[in-house]
Image 1 (spheres, helix red, strand yellow):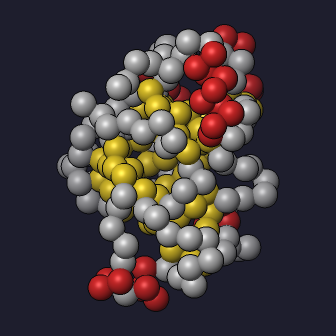
Image 2: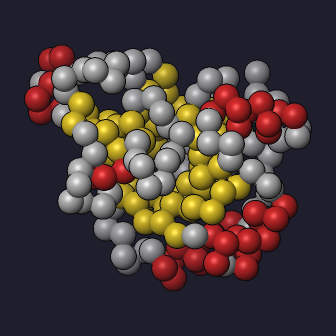
Length: 200
């Protein structure tokens, strides 16, 4: 059972056609994303637009994350001016199971090992990245919270986190920006609509 956290990750009652998400990913992203991130405006896709009409908290930005086997998506804080990511709805697409974990760390933003977003690399421009080489293995902090995204999940991405795939399959999820784009506000709104699943 996934270990949820009221301030970081909560399960959402979100119905979606998994086969459509999989087919869309295979058609548009499977070959173009070596690893990491691709994105689009979901309002341009009729099925995604129908979900936006049904779930009014969905915003007009949808990302796709591909994590290869035995790969770690580096420690980072989502931070970008063009597409602010404070809270997202992460949606399992392929092999989102107990083998892939999202790990949160207690690292202040003024830690000298943070690198600011890149101005030349598109993916690296979307976050602050923790320089593990400069930090050194002996000084690397330990996770303070870990969970597995096995169902649609409201996620706080303003806190330091990485993603580790320890399985033998490639893990893919869709990451939908939401509104209001603050985790506590989004959580309160979804709770008021009865869309946060019972999790305690």
